[in-house]
Image (cartoon, rainbow, N blue to C red; front, side):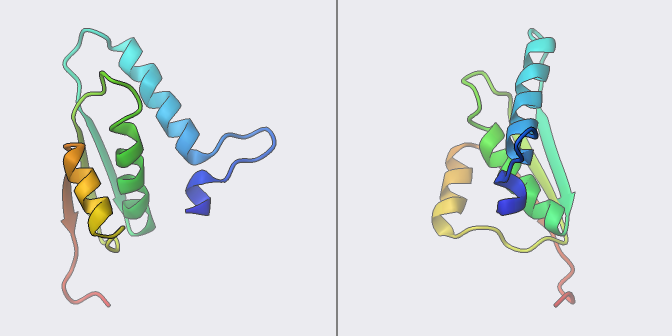
Length: 100
């Protein structure tokens, strides 16, 4: 989580950077039919889900959000899963059953 939320003295966190860019792009493409797809592999798959969680509520007019997660660990607990579902974030988690 620190990788995602930590910021430097003159550098925003990954979380802040992504959310601000998504807000900017929503404004740029105002009037267009939009959707947001976030994807990642391994640790990136975890970050993709955290990003989708934040993006889904970053403003009232946020378009539909989906996550494609490849080879990532399970993220969060039942309450987190319920929150993602309530926000209508669609998640497809793809893993190899032979991975340890």
